[in-house]
Length: 382
Image (cartoon, rainbow, N blue to C red):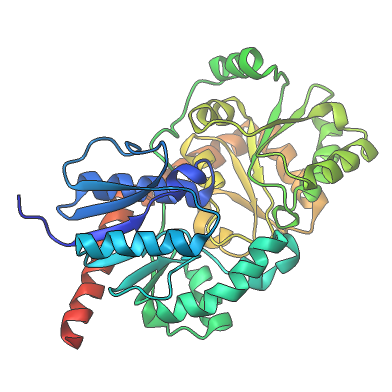
């Protein structure tokens, strides 16, 4: 069979970061490209994850052994690409560790520039690596993809990249996020995770200061007085050092028993968490995109977000947006979304309608157009 282009993709993030926004993006992108295009692909995979997108005839896999010396690892990957004579190389997770010598065009998905904007919310090792490497990465890349117009404006403002070098391509919720009946979902949470409560508020995401979870705890403490003692707040996410400070705040607010942190939840269980919820709340101070609110909206759950950064663009009319510094305003929104059936129904309907504009098929096709443009530009230079 005659394929189109031959494209190498660092697909390791599809395994390493599964369950995060970047992991979801990488997983769904490589899966869609493998099955929906006529190109040939070389996917770099971690050890033990060869068949992560199934057996597609247009995909070759190169297992990258974990090596403490990342320069050796990068040399190994460049050699594999040169041997396969690829047309271009796509790095979907911000381009970190882009080799100094890549003899073919490079596309990088730069999701956001949070380390420039909120450095205090980043891990110190990641912060140092990001700030050191990103100027070279953005200069070397033939084309950048980012996930919102808000992110593109920040990249232009902070790094001086020409706007025409940055394509905005939205990701989408995964297909598993669909409306489910609430009672079976609550039974699942009770049986599998020991979680019970009514009404049930849900948060899914990280716990860095950027996520503004402290404001959520304060708003929950206020709203619980109206919603009753059975109200619980379930906060799903990998436990990090910041969680201890949040636990101390919950104790100070006398809500420790009503705040449940199950830790990391496998992706396949997340639809049940959304289905069990009465309302989903996401008060983040900064997002380059913000996938969890779209997942909640796709599941038909009334959704409340902050009005910060890219969230306004991404959730649009599908969610109730509040000031990320107004705990009373957030509490009022939570109370109304739960206690007022008309508000809950309207939010759920608006969310499901809004989220229809996002699709992985569209993401894949628009990414394919970027590859074509890069390849065409290279031919003109030759």
